[in-house]
Image 1 (cartoon, rainbow, N blue to C red):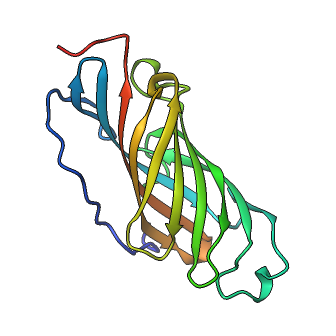
Image 2: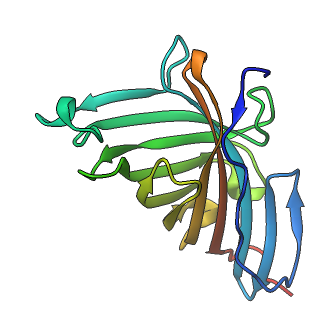
Length: 194
């Protein structure tokens, strides 16, 4: 991918007391476990096609002000992007990054965004599970922090936070690669910690 220009690669992490470590490939790590509560770090890449023949982002609505607004205020779009374990489009497929956003700031380009991380692979009950994320995303910020507000399947009672950053942007293909790290705490009744 020689046409990719790297925009940002930094990610910050919170300090977590490590009581156990379980790793699945390079993208899923259990970093804490007390009783039936686990904390995991999930590091993924989002393959976001904003145009072209493989487009995964579509406009569904716009306000009367959208066309003349410097921030595209009032624009609403939906997305269904591939999630992969590495930045390369052909790396291990992990699931789908699905949701919608609305440009909701008159002065800065910032979204109110709702995301479902839908997993199609992973350990145990992870296949078919979701992590739901919501928040304000100022898209030109180097790092954007969103709240984990819930989950299903393996991630019932999920809470935590999600850091998004732009890994690369291929202008001629209208293609963005997002770097996503989720720190999530959830209850796992099936295997209590020791």
